[in-house]
Length: 88
Image (cartoon, rainbow, N blue to C red):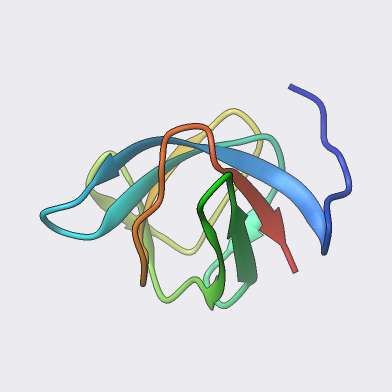
């Protein structure tokens, strides 16, 4: 996966899973993120922005994560596998 500039911001990941019952997205990272960063999640029917309030790697809370990691974050709207994640 290569980083690309999207409609707004730099692509830093892609949604790999969505846990609808708890509103959490699993995101495979290709760039760095930290708590407090703004994200835009964009797909064919998804398009919203939010800040990262907290994130986890394998059920452990972390402040930052980088390329090659898979993080879980609470999302304010439904996302779908394959949606692109941009840092804004």
